[in-house]
Structures are given as structure tokens and as C-alpha cells.
Length: 81
Image (cartoon, rainbow, N blue to C red; front, side):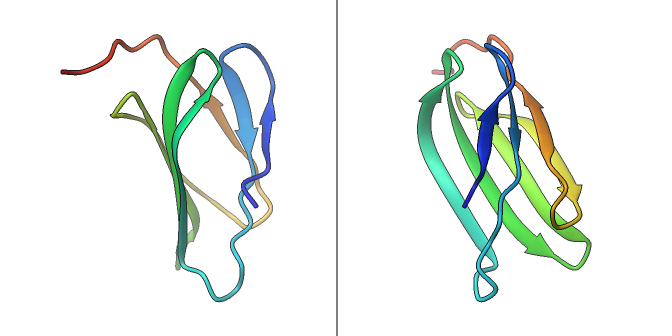
């Protein structure tokens, strides 16, 4: 459903496909790419919006058309207290 594909040690593409009756979906506390992150996908009038939070901080917020992939690069954020 999220179609996550690694493209490097700290990079991935994501091409989420929401079922027609869903407006949003999320993955929480994912451990991959040498970090921990959350993904949130929302359907809007402009397309699909993907937000990625790395260790609680927003690092990616984009809107793309259906079928278009998102390219995400992770940073080296430290845990927030």
C-alpha cells in the first residue's frame, strides 16, 4: 500500500496507493534507513500529500499526483527530549 523502495542507505521512494474509500493512512515508528520515522498520507483535492517525521521532526511534506513517487532523504537527527 505504501510502496516503499530503498534507493540508498538513507534514501527511499514512496508511492502510496490509498483505497478509494480511505482519505488517510499512516505508518508509525518505522525502523529503517538507520533511523526511526513516521509516514502520513492524505488525499486532498490537489493529489496525495506525504509527510515524513524523522525522530518526531517533520523532514518531508509534499503533494504529488496519483502514481507519482516521492523521493525522501533522511538526515541524521538526534532524538528530541
